[in-house]
Length: 410
Image (cartoon, rainbow, N blue to C red; front, side, top):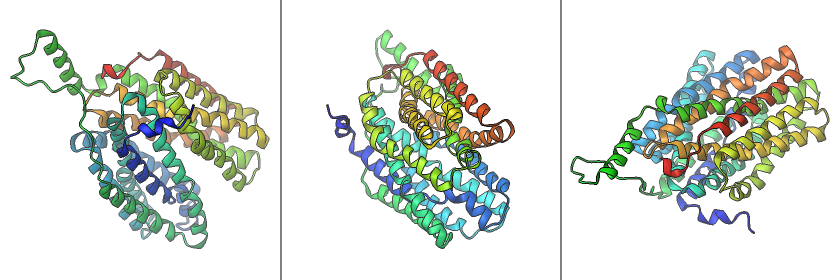
């Protein structure tokens, strides 16, 4: 059995969007080095540099729901194109801003425009694929992200040693090139196959009319009244807070407490990237028929065990084992979470639901690393990793308690 066989069924449009993502991510180098840039070039304290990242997270947090609705109204492609082009322009402009408060403002604008790409991207992939293809399609998109991220930060490390400004120029130009590629790709989004909207002239049977009325109610129902989706969002947050310790508590634990070098930590993180590149697509192809709730629970449990076991991991070998465990959790959790969001979203509102789904991700990115650093500093590593285990366990149990949904429920 060929575990990659599902890729030949992925629509051409998804491949082109993934190629766009690869181009864009291959130039991602400003954000990973932003704190170093702020402390070494702008000469601010580490705390002030961290606030810049918080502003980026806040921008992503605020923009996701509104962009999702824009994507539903005007289509995901225009939103993605505008996001890529304007992001490139803003990043290049960023290199000329030296006032700290000006940097905070530009960072907020940068995040709002740049992060608009994500909900639109997820919405397009959802609309272009069938239910049984989605996990593999989302895994393919994540493969493009991780391939790009294995290039951009590495190149950025060399460029920063020579001239920090080059990071902004290369990152900005790459984003613009990704936008140009998307514009010239010729993607023609397929027509959605949902039920036709009700019109006053419809002369259907009573049963059909009732079904169409229910469909219209779904279309106009406030997302705040969708209890299943709200519970799902709440279930996502604990495990996402755990996951973001890879840029919060984990580097501080490995470098400051265990006294390994930063280069060693970089190599350890490469274990995560290489596994994702080699395993995620075939893994999700094999698990394509799984109930998303079970996949989510398994992914959350592996994240809980992986990060929780860090409390007993002091040698390189044991740390690598924990990274392998939570990386498998990551590879299962993220495609499944996006797939389940697509299933929960009513026809014609995928972008809106993906936007709110992205809110949990942005919120966790904004506060997760900060919480991890504070807990590690104030209470120690044992409390941090034990807390990660219990948070992941809460999410795992919560996912299994969610109501079963299928594409037919949309």
